[in-house]
Image (cartoon, rainbow, N blue to C red; front, side, top):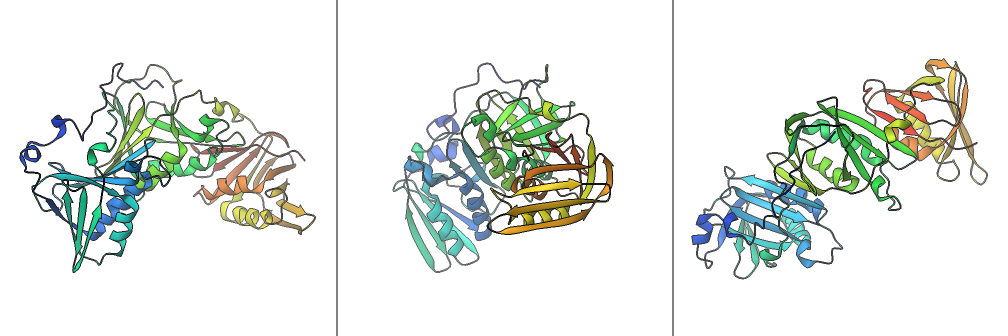
Length: 411
């Protein structure tokens, strides 16, 4: 896939300093007037919880420890950034936010979030005092004044520019990210493997793939191409897995609501009616991992997902060096074993349904296959083998578009 991007994307828009982005009513307002907004506590808490995912506890820039609260003609918004991920949450104009006076402020994120959680139920009045860089909160008889920072120092939003736009269902993208993100590498030795590779395939499906070099997760979901065109199938969009996990949390609960994916030169933008999330794009050449998926197999077994996962978790407790487990598949059963000289040993036997091919003995690390099974919602999985040294292929019975690979251990 080639995702078209503007050859000359506009310079980044500074929504905080550029007067073009300040509503006329705000420019005419006397700064001595305070922007006062009334927000339901639960709505405010939802907004703060969402953007807190982009707040870094160890960022060297003090301004990035804060949340930008902005009230303008489009409503009330909350923005947090760690440069790699920016999240903006909207309370739209038709929400009960109160005033026509506009303003903005940056306040410490953790303090505001913790304070909101402890305020009594009911409406909360927010006052954005730009002159003193403070935010005042009032809930019932409780009143607080939080010292903030200069909102003009808050980093601007990336300008995505004219771009290819894909549209997907929130619940499907959330599930797809969850199915593969765990397989990305947590080590920085090969930075590209810390990302999730995305590619548009078959005209209307978005493929997501992650691998740490030992295991691989690959799935695809329906995606409508709203604009842009493709003229090859080789270009990948590589996004940090950590960012995608945070975006999946934002997607949770979205059910059939649509989320759009806009692709810029350096960033991508995920957007729904409630929030927008900007993620940096990663650089580097991602390995052609799908070529590792075997086209044929010598042995296959259908196993109950829950029973298989439970047996793995028990045997993993005894396995040496992170839970080495032996699997012996025959026509009658699938036997699992683990042992550690200082702890003991154990074995479990599972019924092998639809066993096909040759009997097999293979070794693998328990925690790797455990993570795969936890990501599978299907009640049964098919395990395919290409001998005792070839990769193990795991496919959910009711979701053939999702495939996992696991490199076995040497006996």
